[in-house]
Image 1 (cartoon, rainbow, N blue to C red):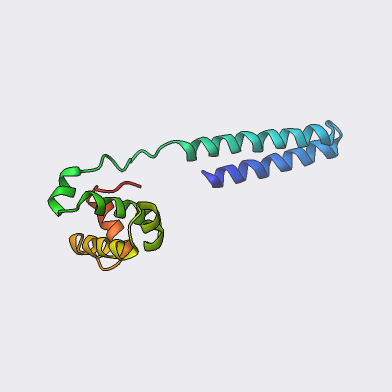
Image 2: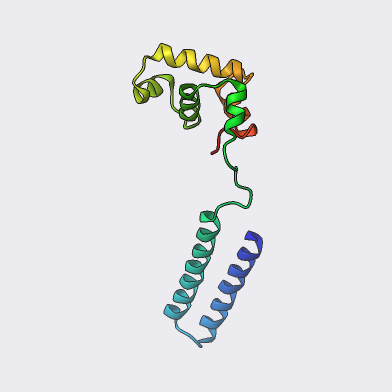
Length: 132
């Protein structure tokens, strides 16, 4: 896609340089044409990135959360971990102590059979109990 776009833009630049040197058009018209092409290409790329992907993460499997024995508070902590918050930031957000968050995190790691927070997040996504 991007290769074709680059080739088309190079062709446009070559065509505009020939048109300018032949004296058929002024530089302002050529520059405005190139600006319009870049504008529409930008709109196209923007629409492609804004659209939701064809493979949505799907709904959260609450039955799986219950099967794993994850409490509501532990699930809240898991969501905050997925946002990249530290234990201290999570504690401040949930109005609990940092040691309580550490306990919840260690419980989550055990229940998800993970060694690190990132691995826990990945397993939660794979089990469809967490969406990003």
